[in-house]
Length: 172
Image (tube, rainbow, N blue to C red; front, side, top):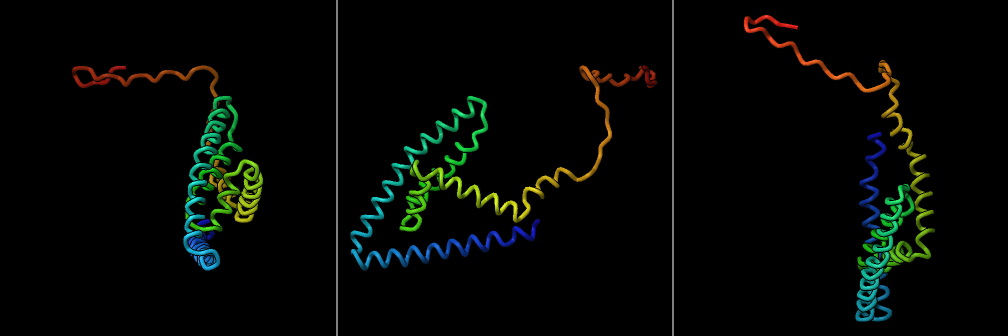
């Protein structure tokens, strides 16, 4: 189990480096085509749009989450939406065009269900491939049997320990 998790950090680091390189390349490409001023203006507009969408959709996702909890339902879809809204808002606020596309996909109510479905499928496939669900279950299912008995009714109250006699002998 530990050996399978050792690759996660290097893959994340390589992914962040790759996204940064693509973002800088794309910003440079757009900046040379339309000019630095327009590129910066687009980035500022995207950050403002991201902040506004994060606030609006975050409020809706939070309300839906609390509604599901207050009705006693398991808020799986609402929890996923809240996570996607948070990640989408952060991606939109970050400078760059690639992160903005994914941020919009996560934030816009029309595309969020598709993103939730795709990410759910990817996570389920990865979980099945790595066997993390089986590993989690096997941690609780070790095959050890603990014997005991079932008692109907309230548990008996514990008896206080016997108090010593003034002569030092135990009574009881």
